[in-house]
Length: 428
Image 1 (spheres, rainbow, N blue to C red):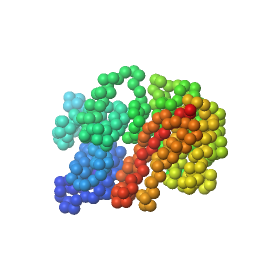
Image 2: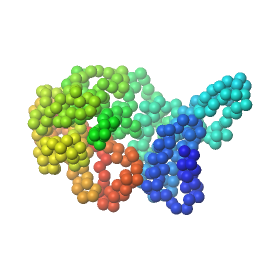
Image 3: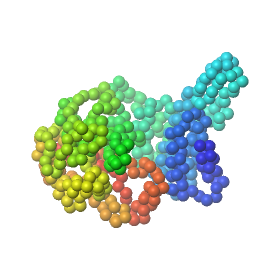
């Protein structure tokens, strides 16, 4: 870890003459992110924090994407919070002196005090300035879930230019604003107050990731289902997931106390899929939604459809699998699905369809999939009721391969598809 810090700081100080490339900076970020996850003591934390500060400075000195620059700032803030947690765990000077004089053993912030001859370094001796230590402490005192939620929101405001900078001050001020209105009924930060459903860290991630045969299958963060349920499902509703996949909807429902808080209520979930799989397979009934809807009178339907053009042959080799169809056949099949949903639902009930658009950077093909979906559902007897957005997180892992893909997209003037739309329709 120390060697990596020295290497990055040498770059920052200009001791290495060749300017870093975007791919090299991305590599520094990946290494620092990995090191941050392995921090065990205050020495490691200081090392990683110095490295992240150096990387952030590097991003300001070279031509680089705004997204990577934000990644660097976010990682520096995360490293400061970790350092703050370890600083908070250090004993006070009075306590440390008492332990030293008594020869007592203690472990705080990664230090071991086990003899009268031991010395306890101060933050100044560790190279941590007082103002920096105070800033780190402020971050460490924010509860993890609140920190993650606010960091996500502030970063989005910067990305959309509603705020100038991503900073510790901005985060702390946002926390203060939250605390001013804090009450016993404060809602979970997993439930978003706006149509931006993005999450810095995913709590309900892929549930079949340990299965080597299925780890490439698509999934959406369970947080999207939690927000769909919160906004569109009432107590005792019949909720149907006709494309349940690995059963993420059930997993999220079972954990509803985590995101409903004191507002917990029950509803009935039924799951179906053309190819049931995963740990909830026994709870998912095999059914082809193109042929018919599996139950009558659902109060709410939610489906994360196989994304057109992105997941061919990943779920099965069946010709009736949406993932394997040509665009023309896919549109015909989706029209039937929309009609089957409309036939099963009563006036006023809701149906959510989750999908991104499709872009082929290499061939220059653009398909506005969400516009097609809206047209099909409106033709079947629905109107658009609501819409939210979420990132597919393709930029989350800023690997050298991703950096090359980004450059290819810019060179070909075809944007990569990152945003998923959560379209909710009301039966008329």
